[in-house]
Image (cartoon, rainbow, N blue to C red; front, side):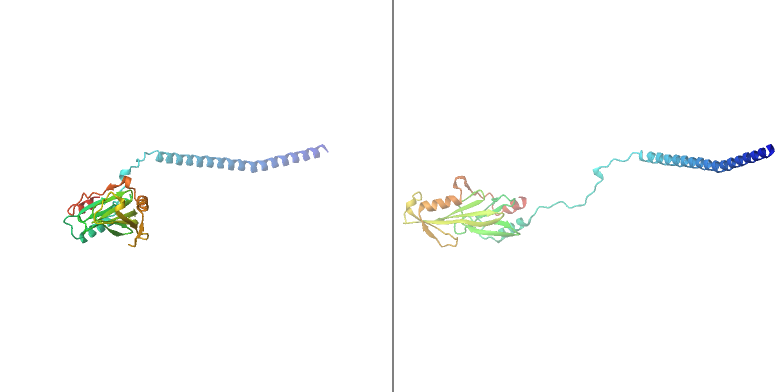
Amino acid sequence: MKKTIMAIASLGCVSVLCGCSMMLNHVLPARESTTTASKEMTTTAEAVAATEAERETVTEKPTEPETTAAIVTTAEPTLPNDEWKEAYVEYIDSLKQLNMAGFALIDLDGNGIPELYFDSGFTAGGGSLSGYSDGAINTVRIGSGGNYYAGNRLCCDSGRMGGYTNTVYEVGNGKISMVFSGCYVAKASEFDMDNPDDFNYSYSPDFSGNFVDISYDEYNSMFSEAFDRGSQQVIKCPYNPSTIVDAIWDY
């Protein structure tokens, strides 16, 4: 009976040992695999680190600073608008009786393009005021001599032998418009220019040339509203037919 128990015990021990051996066989390969994977991860990490180091070495190379000197442009320089100059020169070429003529360039409206003032030099020849707008020149005929400007307005005082006119023009962006048209005529062949009672006064409401009689006070009030005579300046003509063209191109 004792032998049987010992035999059974011996078999149990053998079974336990066999089971442990099998467990070891399963566990050991797993540990070896883990170790191998760890080695592979270590190797990969070292490779990545080496690659990063190489990249850092490359980026550490000095780069050439950017300079504006390397920028090259082929753009054409901006040229001034000379169309108004050409228009004025063509207009001057069309004028007659230039032997006594005088010219002036006055930027009445302050838009950078001056108006062209022309004075023939004698009453019958008259004069003109020209502006440039929307690609074209526009001109109004005015009397010769006795002309003034104040701000963006020009006043033409003209007449002789007892008949006189006051005409006021306004300039805006090169366009010229009439804002007042009046006249006064002597009542007799003999008159005093400083005596308002020696004249009859009238004005044209629609600038058509049809005049309506008004009193001196009404005339004076309307004229003063249209033109600031307190700040008026006489228009002088510094250019003659030989110098005006160069003055236009040089403006």
